[in-house]
Length: 159
Image: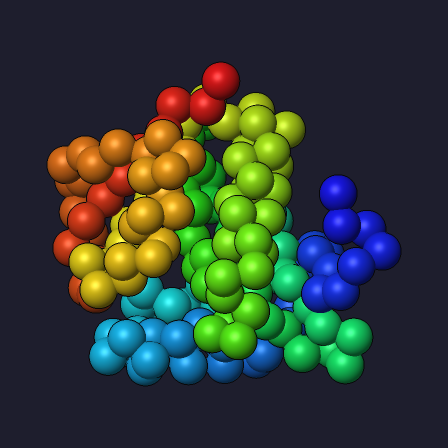
């Protein structure tokens, strides 16, 4: 585990909302995807209510200076299913194993919270993320609906 290393992973709270939104929006812009603060990204306005109060969780990867360089949320969809949301990693931190670190943390947290299945939505331009999901065993499935900027859905049965 990475307890004594930076960046460090910690639970998010509402004081982080602005920094998380800034990270997410900058990465979306990097891939020519549009932020949607009124709908798809509305959860970023109140992390605690959107995730924790519903039985999910949200983590941030924080640098020593307090900047947030990565994040992920687990949103309960059904009693046994969570959706992986807002898993993003700042460009300068990619390729260092931190994406795997975030994914392994998300999978571990999902199991700890009692979820048996994880789903996610993504956009085909996010090729690195899709490769990461597939490397962990996620398989494409036909979702009932997709958010406005997403064109693919994946699922994983948690063991």
